Structures are given as C-alpha cells and as structure tokens.
Length: 426
Ligand code: SF4
Image (cartoon, rainbow, N blue to C red; front, side, top):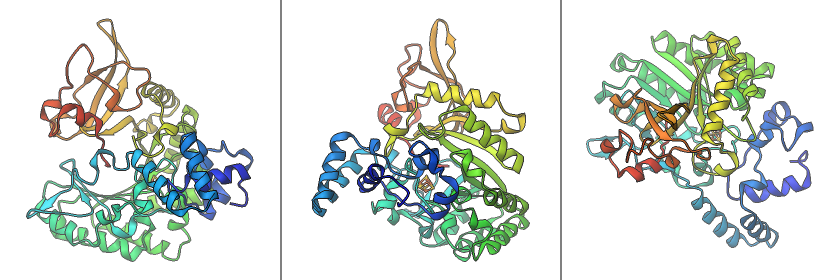
C-alpha cells in the first residue's frame, strides 16, 4: 500500500469493508503501471475505488472506521452487500444437481453436457478483481458451504450421467490449490469408468495474476505433468484463461506460462467480461486476442459484465459493448475470430448480441442463445426492442410488440422473474 497515495488509500480501506480486496507482489511489481494510477487498468481491476459506493454510503462507512465503531462498520457493510445482488440468479439455488434426492454440494448442472465443480480448496484467488461476480464467497457470505469437499460426489453423479461430456473445475481459482489436491479431483476422471468425460476445463486467473504457478512454483512442474497425464489419457484439457487486459500477457513469465501449458497438449482459451475503466476499447481487445493467438491461445468469449457487486462502476450499454466487439473483431486475423460476444450469461442461457439492425422500420437488438436451458433454444434468432441505455438482459423487452421472448413459455419461472435472473456458469 506504500505506493498508493493517501486519498486512494482511504478509498481502499473504506470500500474493502464491503467488497473483497487482495493483491500480490507480482500484480504490484509487474502488472500495474504506477506512473498511470489511478487510471491504470490493472490498478482499477485490483484496487477498490471510491466510486464503487455511493457518496452517502461511503461517508457513513468512512466515519464509522474513523470512530473505530466495529459494530457500525459490520452493520453497514452487510447492508450494502445485500443491496449489491450478492447471488445473482439464485446461483446457490438453481442448477444444483441431485442424486437420489440429495443435493450435490459444490456442483452445478445447467447445460446437459457440462457439469461445474467448485472444489472447496479452490474458492479463493491469487488476487481479487474489483468486478468479481463471485465476490460474496470472499467476504464470508456462506458460499463456501456450497463448495465440494472431495471428488466423491462428482464421480458418483457422473457415473450416472453418461450425457455429461465436460467437467468445468472452477472457483475462485482452482489453481490456487496445490497440484496434489487438484489431482484428487482430476485423476478419477481419467479412469475407464469415465470414458464419457471427454473434456476437462479449468477456469483460472492464475495465468494472469500468478503465472509462477506454471513456471517457478514449487509444484509447477508437477502441475505441468498432471496436465500431460490428462492429455495422454485421451481427454481434451482446456484452460479457461481469465485475461481482462493485454497488460496481463506482456510479462515474459506470463508468456512462458502460456507456452508451457500449451506444450502439454492443453488448450488455453481467453475470456473476459467487458469492463468500463478497464477494457472498454477495441485496441485492448485487439492486442489481447492478437498476442494470445501468436502464443497459441484461442480467443473464446467476451462477456457482458454481470449484475452484481459494483456493477454501476463497470457496466457499459449493450450497444456500446457490441460496437467495441465489432471494432476489435475487424482489426484481427481470422485466427482470432474464434471469439464470441458480447454474451450475457442470463437465466435462459448465454445470450449473444448479434447486432442492432432496423427491421420493418423498427430498430432492434438481434439476439440468439449460444447455450440454452433447453438444447433446441440454441441458435434461434430473436429480437428485443432497441434500448440505447440497456446494460443487461433484464432491461430488454421483446421487439415488434410481442409480449414475450420465444423461450419464456418453457421457463420454469414466471417470465418477468426469469428475465431478471442470471446464473453463475461457464
Ligand atoms: S479471479 Fe475470478 S473469482 Fe477470483 S476475484 Fe477475479 S473474477 Fe473473482
């Protein structure tokens, strides 16, 4: 904190009572450009800012801290967290699979092919992102109870669900775990019993926040050998690399990490939400995708920032996100055009913004679901009325005077409520 000027330091102290804050020496020394704070994108990504709370709330908390009133601090911070939609889409309550009538903790099964696993020891990160959509678990909000303590539930469930081809191990950051702990979740999936599991994905930001994980950590070589075993067992291993800005790919060690992972036969896919103050410009995406492709990674998703946490600080109108996506897409080689976006992980599925055409005199959002709660919803074009200020799917209404979107009759919830919900997901 020594390098952070006084007024910014106060904001970190105050805002971090509500939203989690953690950094590390690598982020401080290699990723943040201290000549450019507070506007440096990685500083914005990692350090809490005053504007993430409204003025009155900020002042109340600041005064409680100055008075040393722990009760008031806890009370007010708790109230503010509740106002920040801590569990978008009932992520604790929807998509939780059951086996013999018992809920499987630490797992989600939304799309038929893919099961998500949240291992208990992977529910933290090397540093925290200020936009994080899983922030409540870092402030002791009980979500850890939701994490899987071992692989037994996963293997029991997968043994009965032969339709599942993909397991996504996610967090937090599963690569915060030591290799031998991670291996306890992965190794069982390499046995003949789980032949139907073809793809193992690991969602991680270690590639950006702690590339030492793959290069110089005590068990980095062991981790690389684990990746090799997965590939040798005939599985596709996909490292879902959370890169929010090209600065994360500039250090030599970050590039070495990427190359070491890819040399195992694994793929690295690049994904990130678009975030105001951090990457809301086409050049940032162009550099990220171009560098990634040169190093052997695959651009995968540009997401729309979720409706949780300090969303008002980061959100961007959907139309602007679409324009930036298109601008960046036009600047890159065909090899980088594997990227999809902007995409909203909303309750019905992954909603892709395809454009803003004018049809029969009405300007609309052209949309489609890349993944849907029902398989046959995918890739069916549908339309929402154009709204230049909308920042999330729940603010959109059907175009052409229609009363509902095509999928709403089949949702397990009333349409309006369903549109408001979002889920945690791949
Ligand atoms: S790495 Fe992912 S889970 Fe961890 S703080 Fe950042 S966004 Fe949240």
